[in-house]
Structure formats: structure tokens, C-alpha cells
Length: 347
Image (tube, rainbow, N blue to C red; front, side):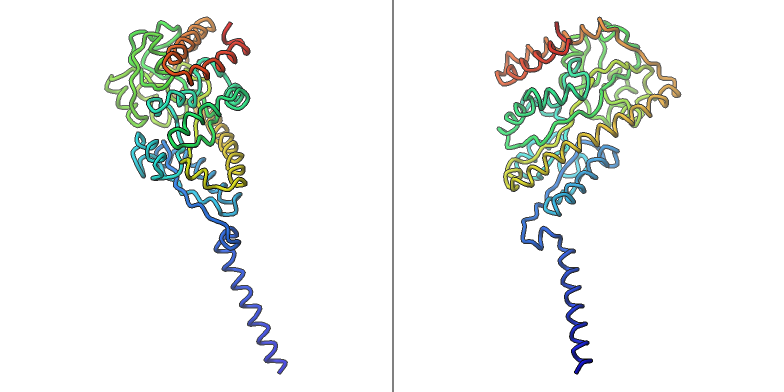
């Protein structure tokens, strides 16, 4: 009898272990009866790009901190839809999220340009964060995106955009008459400086310069290097074209509203951490890339403060021109100009 009871007890323990294992395998969220949100996210960067690696790691962290309730499958550029269709696709719920550079979307709303940074204005990550969070620019952009059924989870400072070219730039007039691959506010500012902006995707920059379609490009230092732009150029303008470029995480509004409040809060806090992850990666990569560019014979040039101030003046002119077309943009411009005066960029 005792032996039979012992066997029964062991069987009960074994069953309990198996049930417990199944419970863990399903995930705490599912086992507790909580809804699991299985989402897809498409990047604007190609497969294998280091910044995609950073974002994919963040997706894994989101799953962990939400106890498996938010499960994001990450896709590289064009893997679900072509990049230029990502805004509409996310708006319509084809997928739930975009890891994004919002310069693509100024045709959808002018406010998207503010999500890419303000050249010759926000000169540090602190400036960018102060404008977005402290001065309310993030909420203004969110309002504009919401009209397209999109929620801007976060816009965060990522890196500086510099200019690599076949010709040296030591003063503003050196841009005059040159064809330059760029986009968003940078294109407008360079146009005011006398350049002819051209836009092509990053993967086409090397061939465009090699064939003489344009003579230079704006990108981050390490991205120029990773795309081999140093092989078809001679100069790097170290004075940034855009001191702090913004990257963004956009969510389909219906998907965002479907989340309970506690997950929304976790998501927003985690998105700030994503910004820190990208800043850490990019600034470190840029510093490590500079000696490599020097070793390849790339010459560094700089704009004097007086010339830099001219470019800031062009930026103000661009903002004022856009403000005439869009009252919402005009309100945001006043916020930015007030900040520019406070930090001494504008007198």
C-alpha cells in the first residue's frame, strides 16, 4: 500500500512539473489570460544594418519587459512594402509599426520635417530633447500624425549628419551651383545656399556620385563609410549639416489604442531607452570611423562661425516660408525660433 501511495505521489509531482513547464512555455501573459499583441515592424534601413540590430534587440527587450504581451517581429527595409509606401501601409494596418526617418513624409504633413531635426538650430541631443519634450514639439507632431491614423511613439536624437563631397567646403558660397543628395530641411537650407538638392535612397548614393549625377551627400559619418562613399569623394565637411538628426518609432493608431494603459506607459519609457541605444551606437561608430576616413585620404574641412550663422539664417527663412502655408507648422516654428533665441543661435 505504501509503495502504491509513493508511486501515486511521484506521478502527481511529475504531472505538476509538466503543467508548470507548459505554463512557462506559453508565457506568463497567456497563462494569466492576458491579451498578447503580435505586431510587425518595418525599418527604413537594409537588412544587416547595425542600427537595425539595435532596434531588433529593443523589440526583444519590449517582449521581455511586457512579460511577452507585446511580441514584435522586425523586418528590414522593403521586406513588407517599399519604403515609400510604409506610411500608408502602417496607417491602414498592413503592419503595426515603423522604425522611421520622417523626412520621407513631408508630403503627408509638413510637421514630419520637424521629426528629423532642425539643421543649424538644435546643436546637441539636449537641444533636441528640450524642444521635443520641454517645449512641446513632440505633442504637436503627434497631433499632425494622428490625423493619418498614426501615433508617434517617440522622436529621439540619433546622430549628426555631415557632408561628404568631391569638392571642399570652407564657406557657404562653396555650395553654390553644386548638385547634392539630401532631403527634408537640409535640402531646403542647401537650396537657399545656392545648391541643387537631389534625393535618392541611400543605396543609390555611391553610384550617383560615381557617375557624376551629384557631387556629394549628407549622411552620418559611419553611414558614409559603410556605404563606401569615401571611395568616390575627397572631402568631409566636419561642421554638421544637421547637428542632431531625429529617428522615430511610429505605430498604427488603432493598434496603439488597443493597448492597456500600463503597456502604453511601459512602451513609451522603453522607446526613450531605444533612443539612448541608438545614440550610444552612432556616436561611438562615428568616432571610430574618423581615423579610417583619414587613413583613406579624406580631408576634413570646417565652416567658420560666421558662415555657420549664415546657414542658421537660411534655416529661419525656410521655416518662415513653410509657416505661410500651414498654421500648425507656423505654431511649431514659433516654438523653435523662441528656443533658438534662448540658446543664442538667433539674436
